[in-house]
Length: 223
Image (cartoon, rainbow, N blue to C red; front, side, top):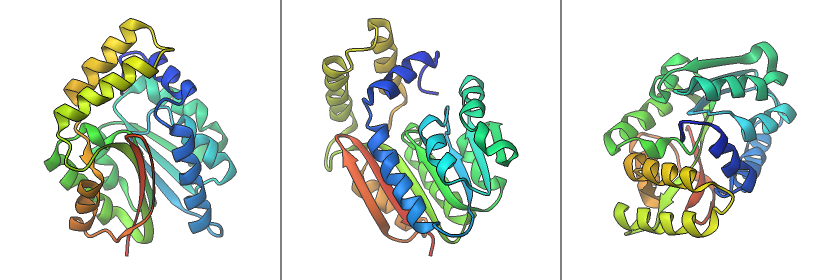
């Protein structure tokens, strides 16, 4: 979970500070294009409240949805947001790294969660994602990204400047909490770093990508 209380994160979503809307619109187009006919099983790693993805899945429902998150509070919100899927939903209060072991999937989805892992944990997770994807499946990733050649410290300084100057709808105490979180927990990769992780895990090439500021979407194939 990004914050101790979920309300500040809802403000971030409402104000679209991290371009959730645009990136999820692209994700919806990819899902609809790949699975226009037939059903699919979806695994959501670090699902949070599933607020944006739930809107996509109402129009294009999967056969099953499995969501993993460490926040029990977020999962309660996800249960409400995903109510249209009824008994297709399984929500698990556990580390996202455990998700791929829960069974095969046609789509693995993760939004703004994997950057919390260190490099070795990312390597292991990408490999497990590849293993759980069925042939023809896809890994849809939305996450924070550093510029090429940009060190983590420089990225964090730049991100802090952006938050302080543009995230005006948040209370100061929430800004302080967010900044403490990103300096402690955020370890974003570069675009090439994400592609290297996918390639080394045995995933296929990146079919589609979209970037807004330091927020990016990738879609990797399972050959």
